[in-house]
Image (cartoon, rainbow, N blue to C red; front, side, top):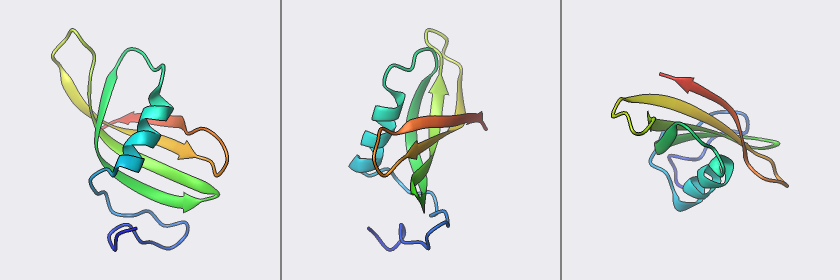
Length: 90
């Protein structure tokens, strides 16, 4: 864990570029998601009983070329699959 990612349990890290592990959590949680396409570029994490993720994403709905930003919230339990808990347009 980098200095930037270190935090107290329950506190959120500052947003930072995704690691390969962050990208894997995002991909697993979004598997099978249809409609809007989300491309994460930064993440903030919170250690709880598992890990909460807030991914800043560019979003679009092809074939339209309109883009916006969104926060995709994902929970990764200690034992189990990550899943989306909320999506907020920003």
